[in-house]
Every structure is written in structure tokens, then in C-alpha cells.
Amino acid sequence: MSPILVFQCFLLFFILLASSTAPINIPRLSPIGPRILEDSDEILPKSISDDLETFFYNQTLDHFNYKPESYNTFEQRYVISSKYWGGANSLAPILVYFGAEAPLDGDLAVVGFLSDNAFRLNALLLYIEHRYYGKSIPSGSREEAFKNGRTRGYFNSAQAIADYAEIIIHVKKLLHAENSPVIAIGGSYGGMLACWFRLKYPHIALGALASSAPVLYVDHISPPDGHDSIVANDFREASETCYQTIKKSWAEIDEIASKPNGLSILSKKFKTCKSLTDSYELKNYLVSMYSGAAQYNKPPTYPVNIVCSGIDGSSSTDSGKDNLSKIFAGLFAYMGDRSCYINSPANVPETSMGWRWETCSEMVIPIGRGNDTMFPPDPFDLKSYIQDCKDLFGVPPRPHWVTAYYGNHSIKVILQRYGSNIIFSNGLKDPYSSGGVLENLSDNITAVYTVNGSHCLDILFANKTTDPVWLVAQREVEIKIIEGWINEYYDDLRNQHPNIARRALASSATVHSHHISPPDEHD
Image (cartoon, rainbow, N blue to C red):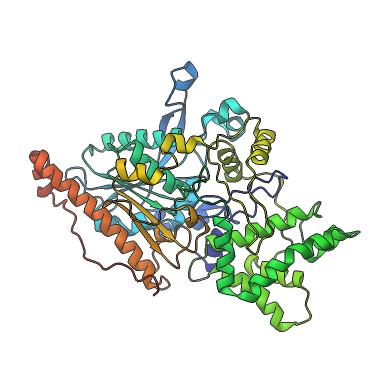
């Protein structure tokens, strides 16, 4: 994969919502942002694709009702790699990746935690696509699936994790691997699903790795301004002059926009693909760019530094250059040389369409901004948010449902009392870490975080050349914990089911632990 393509894979959501005036600005929850280059075959390395087999499961449309239409089915995609699997007879583990709000192809190309550790664990790898994304579309087509509330109503997290349960059981039965332990792995929204799956289906998953999962960023459990405060801090740490330039730019945009032909001036200055109709379009785009750079601020490129190098570099080469020219220089440095910028295509991509629905139904994440960041103040207004969603989809969101279904405002207590075998991993430079679990809740609900980490960085493919020491150590801590869960499971089998354990031992299934030290987050 070329460095430029890798960089583009981690842009956030420049196409998200820019074509809509509705201010539903919840950044995507995904290990990767929407790619500028959409051809998944081009970004999936052949060395990986050769190990993968694609299957389709005849999935139940509605797991929670018994109306005739509930029994309708759709084809749900899942992918398997058995290259290093020790086999069912040895009770070798199964690592299951929970797809989130995007086609599975992109995750296969960048999420390497499973394949990087398959040999070490002798594990079968199972990747499952989320319903309503990619090739897992109910109702025969995307147009039908999103046509109205009757078809969109089956699109929610409870149905999704029930899908995962069915497919895991199906695969284990096909492979005669009913006694193989399962570890659920997901990033961001997928990490939330992995956590919730462990709580709802502990008989199916032995444990879960929830990477960058903001399970506390719902229903006002975490402060609404946490996300954008971290974005601003990331930029301030990178460059004070860059931070101040961005902070001053918003008033200047509004000032120019208020003048005769002001929007035309802004359109020309920022090389927009279409003429701006409101300054909000430009400001929303820039906010999205800065948020995406912070969320996916990974080595070796470090997008925040790229943006600030453009802004500050412009300052050093031309001291007389105006502020907005410096802002454009940051945009140019980040996005590269393009014929035009900012305006999205007329057709909303499926991921943006799906995430709009999810955030207008149950995934209400109250992101707002106070007065003390580099952004203009924009407090979260639930009433306005609800009205926007009603205008868009004809139904109001249910902002309290996630806490009602998965755990109330005392979610930490719920996890501590009723949960087990969950790793919450975070990087503190990730804006969504403000809604993450950052402390151990029990001996087996563990928080593993790094000071300099970004969104889902720990579950991406390892790179021996560019990965910093603290990232290597974070991944080692996580896999060591998972090995401990698996070994404890085998110990339980020895005690409770000696015949099964003897067969497993005869096949050399025991996972061998490796001693490591905790990561030095400052390395």
C-alpha cells in the first residue's frame, strides 16, 4: 500500500454531512475514516487477501419479534482465515472482529491485531460485517433498505450483536468447534459492540477487546465538550501559533461572509468545488478536518503536525499572508494538491447514510463546544438535535435507550458488578477517549491506555519500522491479558471437563504466556 493511500485511508469524514444543512455532527466511530479512494480491492494487500475466505450467512431480519416479516432473511457477509488455526480438536481460540459503520473491506485492510496474533494464539480469525453496510444489506438493495422507517427500523445495535451471535454459533457448529473460546474484538463503535456483546452474550464470547470505545459518551455521562477539548489540546501541543491561527479564523470567515460577494471571495480563497451558500459549509468542513486529524493522529504521518506545518510554514514564508490563506495552506498540506476542495458529491455514501441513521436513532453522542477551545462555541442542544433528526428521518432519536439497554448512568458499577474479561484500550490524544473507560474497574475489567495514542491505533497492523515503543508495549499488554483468559478457560476445562481437556492437551492447544512489563507511556 502506498504511503499516500495509507494516509488517505485515515481521513475522517469530509464527506459526512457536508451535503446536508442538518447539523448532526457526530464524528464517525470507526477504526478508519471514510476513504477518499473507495476501491477496496486496491487497498487490501494480496498477502492478506490470499488467506481469507468469504461466506454469506442467511441472517434473520428481526431477532426480537415473531411477526411474519420478522422471519425474512438477508445475506450477511463474513470472512474467515484459518491459516494458523490449531483446529477444533485442540480447542484453539477464535478471534472475532465486529464490523461497524462501514463495509468490511476497509477494516480488513487496516485492522491487523487479529492476523498479527493469529500464529501466536493458533487462532481462527472471523470477521463479520455489520448489517446495512457493504454486502450485508436487507431488503434486496440499499435503496429499499433505507427507503423508509419500516425498513430502517431493523437497523440498530441490538440486532447487530444478535447477528454476530448467530454467525459465531453457526461457524463453530460447522467447524465442530463448540468448545473453542471466542474473543470479540472491535474498534470505536465496533468496540462498544464488543463490550456490549460480552455483557449480553457471555456464554458465547469468553472476553472482549474494546478499542477506543466511548461507552461513557452517551446520555450525558461524559461532558459534551470533552471531544472538542481534546482536539484543541492536540493542536495546541503541536503548535501554539497554529492553534491561535485556527482560533482567530472563525471570526474572519464570518466577517468576510457578511460582506457583499463575501461567499464568492471565500469560495475562491478555499477553491471550493461549488460556490458556498453559507459560511457554515466552510466552517463545518474545517472543524471536520481538524477533528479527523486529531482522531487519527497516528505515526509516522501525524496528521495534526501536517496541518500545523502547512499553517505555520505559510507564516514563515510570507509574514504578510492573511490568516485565512494560512488556514488554506493547512488544508492544502493535509489534503494535497486538488482541483477543488470542500463540497461533497451529491450522492451521500452508504457509510454516511448509515451513520446518520444510527446517530438519529440510538447512538446519540452529545458532542458540544464551550468557550475555551480553538473552535467557536457550539453547545449541544438536544431539542434542536431531535428536531433535526425528525426533519431528516421522520422519527425522533431515543437518547436514553443505550443506557437503558446496556447499562445506566452507573455503567462503571454495572461493569464492575456484572461484567468480566473486557479490555478497554485508549489513546489519550483521541478525542473520543473523553468517553472511554480509563481506569481498571476490577481484576478482569482492565483499562490499557497510552498518553500519545490515537483512535484505535492498537488494533491496526503492527509496523516494526514506525511503531513507537509505547504502542508495541500496549499491544503486548493486551495480548498477554487475552492469553490469560484463554489459559484460565483451559484450566476450568481441566477441572470441569477432564475428557475434553485431555483431547485438547493431546493436540497441544495450551497457549503459552509471555511475561512483559507495562508500557512506558512517555517513551
